[in-house]
Length: 283
Image 1: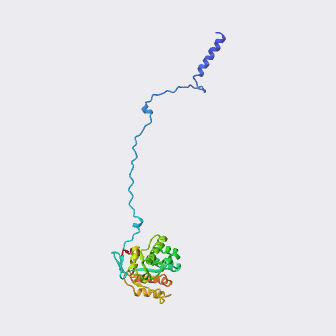
Image 2: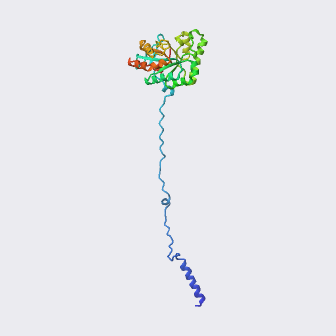
Image 3: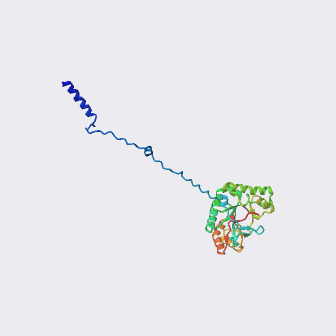
């Protein structure tokens, strides 16, 4: 065999050996493919039901602000005597209505009165004059914010019995409008200055949705005999005390000074204080 054939055979053997081994000289094995069914290779799907939707419960009906704020009517005023009579089984006849006229005019006096009322858990009606409301709108708001009731006492504190119906209408309606503009509600109670009114004034007050009243127990705190004498104010009220009393007082310093002791004495006599919100105003 000549040299060229010898070299050719050697090269062919080298190529064949390199094709059957890995770079490190180990033998390479062709991977064996196993037959798998489509069912086995397909992803397994689990059956899931749709999530059940539970109907949301219907909301409970809620009371309107008007319904929530309603106070049961417990007292009715006798329109001849201006005394109060219980109309509810839970109301006692041994109760009095506290009222204060001719404000709002003095921050210190008014605040003292409000503090005394709060200490005794008492409610009252503050009968205001329109011209004083114009002068002291913040004091009117204070009465309302402290949870007390605002009443109408005419605009100018004049003797309405001597005036025409047109003037009476203006005297009452202007206070209604001004009070509503400041605190959001109209007065439900009216007291004529000097207790002087008559049928015409009563009808106009009624047309404005107000209960007309004077009083049945006068403290006489306005009289010079009581000026600067809280003890006289207290004595005057206690001497006239009766079940259902409609007590007239004024926004005066000596009345403010008397109030805490007066309320204590009334409670010691077994009296409670009528909440104006519990007074029936249909008349």
